Image (cartoon, rainbow, N blue to C red):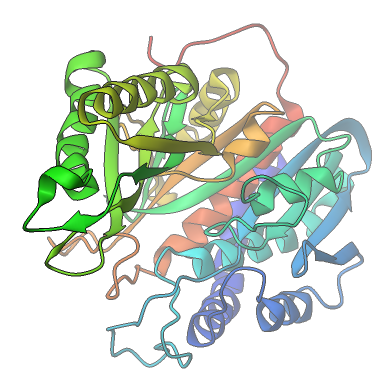
Length: 416
């Protein structure tokens, strides 16, 4: 047995410190690109370690490197740091003190897990092959509009622009997953998280008095038909067995009750586990619908359609290797690793990293198995069983070591 097999016995000594860190971050959450206090807490937690740290990545992010003592590849471990603009409804002792801001997606847990993984891997660096690069990333929840860009740019894309992936051979991340109980780790073959694109449609008609509608071109009537027709893109253009969705999220138009509206704007999202559907099929079919509607009703239209995040693709070779390693852990760890075929259309900007490097994204069970209540992500009452932090540290360390030592033998299919 190698030294790595003893890792589960080292984690309990770290767990109180990591839970305290998580609670402090949860108590003072910060939105994307504003995580200055969070970054300071991370730096304080890593103080005293012989680490090469680079703060200020995309404003608030932190990159560090652990140099192994043996030759080998470079693996990047990533955790996200930002909170959401949600008013927390919990009443525990570490409830958010920042009104309207809350860690409702578990990023406080992800940060604590990566701090723990860094500490353990640093302590074992003499036995590590290659290098561990780690990234505390800001603003996973929010892209940013820059003056030189046509559309908002994700924080992950900005990280890549800065060269953080240079020299990296593989990437690793995880996400707390309320649908799984604590002790369960899920690995999804292939498309692990959905890709998403967003659209803005503007309809232009002609205003008139409501008593003489024939003198106008009514965009309110047009948009009522358009919303139904957009749903037909999903139900009549795509195989019903393929996980996709189209959602209209905002609708604005009109001036007053007795005026034919000459302008309406709506925005929405499309999501799929197939990049071609997002990039080609949805865009073309939405445009076809608009062309037909405009011809039928005599209105004009404008379509803006932008990619938001790509489909997050797991490398099945890495997935199988990590699955085997985690399932070989001592039984006292009480960890169950499973292959899941759950299709989730939740977007995750870790996909920008797996678009450029082979990688793996794990689902980490975080719901107390003694309860039948599952509080979803992005909910004002979201919380998680903090035992998941220790399991997450173990999973991240074991997976990192697996990727450092993995010898590629060709494609493997976890679904077989």
